[in-house]
Image (tube, rainbow, N blue to C red; front, side):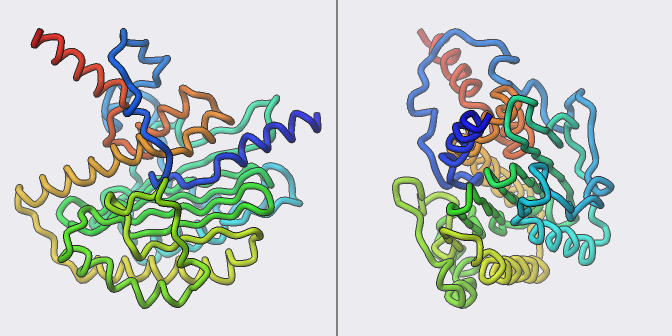
Length: 333
């Protein structure tokens, strides 16, 4: 009924921050050693993504349905960020003809809300190229309640390039958020000068995207740059006027930089980048507040699996790493 729908909408609109780890307080800070819970209860990953026994799904064929023509909530609702994912996919397909599927668990690729909840759908796609080991995209359509486009691009380990993180969100008619950043793997000054400083002329062209998130949520010392695009709007008009061209410029700059790089395939360099990307995933998984949105529509267990097996697949759930720490501590007693 209308009352239940308003309550649900209010819950969803409280989740007003991005997926890529900019926000929230880490659950690890309050974790204490405790008897282990079941894997099903915790949504524990029991095998690496590539070794999962779940049915695997590919993305290239499914991506042909983009752009979607109508919202799951009805034709009167705008698919606000559909032009972004449509352009993004076409860019990859046109410029990376050798782009391949990166299969992942079918259950994580698509979900639709239950009958007793407002209509919502989430679909994800995953690819890889010679230069990028993982390209993941997710679109959430919940009508007026939520429109979300999330994309994270991980360079191959032989490149120390930043990770490209994109979070474009809207909740209701007056809560529109946008974050796009070349997320540095380190805050070393030479690294920032090489990869981040060249973004400054692009960023300054878009004044309404030069905002700063609250320091309460935004840790500029970890995996974020001073040249990130951030905008918070009370209507959707800047989405196509400012955000879309800024998104295109940032992404094209990112690809241009990558095309000029020579990879370092030494074991030391690859091991270093691999660890830094793993640290990024761990940091992001622990601080990602979007898990609350996933839980609202698709349940706690699915949200946990989606976070640790798809979004940030190199991360280890906090309860698992803490349990190992408890075992080590117990062995020393």
